[in-house]
Image (tube, rainbow, N blue to C red):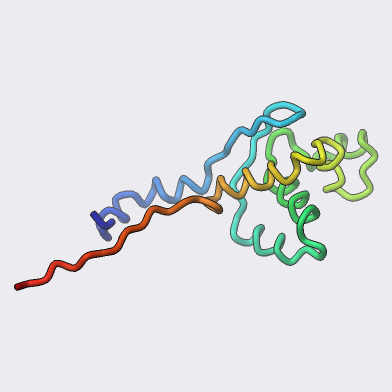
Length: 124
């Protein structure tokens, strides 16, 4: 059965609150907590020159909320020259892409959507 306007109105708060969900990911440094990327974050990451790995690093830097990767003391302790340099210093090379992919899945990217042909009921 298709979703109705009444359903969407009734679920308004639940739908809005889904965007505020946080997620725990198991990594080589332990459990980290991430937030969903916003559309603006994703758009900005797509514009990053070189894309790929650097885009993943920036996405992780922007979305990890615990531990706070933006902490100046943490960055100083690891000798970072740019703030996002902390990401490759903390995580294994191969897991950076996996963490970025997990963050994207939290926002619905790569989600499989079920579909079937909509059959109209015809009056005979």
